[in-house]
Length: 171
Image 1 (cartoon, rainbow, N blue to C red):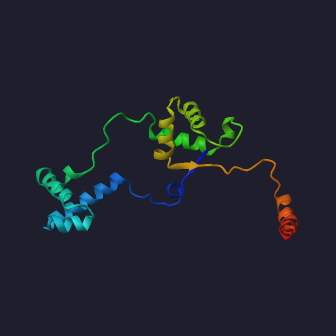
Image 2: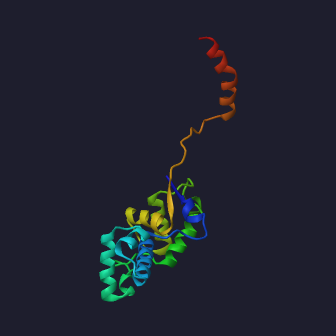
Image 3: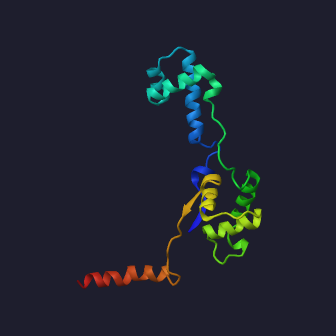
């Protein structure tokens, strides 16, 4: 297994909106439509949600204003790696596995975990390493092609060109 940046994470200059950002954008648009006097059903259709969500948003908006519908910061335990450390980890991983003393240039969760520990001093579980790779770095799982080391492409081409027609005619 190896891990590489996914095309969506590294290919465009403007990253797509995350789910929380998209949800907040819908609520902000709903507030604009509340202020214009739109009905719940019209607003629901316009922002692509059910009317019950719009009713709930309207109640919150009436009680606390537009700020009450803004996204709140995440609760729970803060991540073990800050953004600067994640940037350091990205740079270290982009140098390749062999640059860190591994025999093959493939990344596994264990290897990435070791590099994270060397670079930042923070030890992470395999699940946390996976979340760093996929969630914070935007990388995806890539499986290497399985190919025999002994495979000889020229010999295979010769066999297909010469031996296979001879065998096929013998039927």
